[in-house]
Image (cartoon, rainbow, N blue to C red; front, top):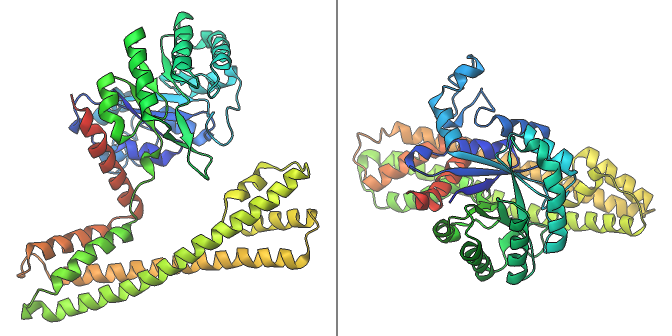
Length: 449
């Protein structure tokens, strides 16, 4: 079984490139992209894992060791070879993105070829087996010039278990070898994203029956990867992709808070006179930092609520324009998901309000709301800068203690070392470390042969 991680920006590629694949013998990973991504990402996806020679996360973020060498010499890099040998690249049409499947088959397959994918997925029609089968026929014709470029993946759709199996059977009889199961995701409430499987029972019933009735060498469950399903999918030898993998991580200061909570308890038990005064100063810094964090949290909560209100206001304005059959450019539609607007975006919104002949006091009220959100956002940034300054001060005080030579408990020394590490690591690297660790522990570890 190969776990696929959905990626649509270079940062995702950086995270995946830094996984310790050598620690998981026999395990491969997949990267699932879509065709609506930017040209910049498509180039990075094509060149992965050597898309950025200035920074290679496979060697801890240092510049590529072969960056001044020829392409032929770069192919000799052992890190590159390991990643290439253990990575499969796949791409879909973007049918589940906000834009939908925008390209014709000729354009789509040209994009797949340009991105150097191993597998390219057809354009399927959600829960509509007949329409999906017709689309598969079109895909087959358009695929002929690309047969030596990538493997075509067609998709079985349906509403019931029997419809899925019937669709699968018809696709197999048309000669398709790589058939995925799609349409098993449902929308979370109040979101446009299809982010969860509607029924685990339906999912595994379909997969098990396909395996039993048709004995395919290859089977993919689109969007259905989750740490809780890894072992079952692995047992069935079914590949699957996972979208939610990148969003779950703690910010650096949140992690520092957790360590400080433990440290504060430990400090209360220390009676060593040699370090007493130094520890009092450290405790004062911690209390000062706590006050700044509480102020920031209050403002963050307020900003969150105000952003929701502004988004709702903008969505109502856009809906009113749509009801009046006004044609709205994409830049205006994007405002509906924004809670903080730039000055240019504010100007666009004011033009819309004037277009709707809204009263000036109404326009003034919304612009004041926009400016208040910008002010709150800046205040939060200022508090974050202050907190980071306090973090550095705390780190300096801890280092002055020379924790290796003084008589402190192992728990306190452990907290001090972890604080120094967290304070000195960047926010970005902290995030990368967490996400990679979760991938390795929750997914890769379960797949070791």
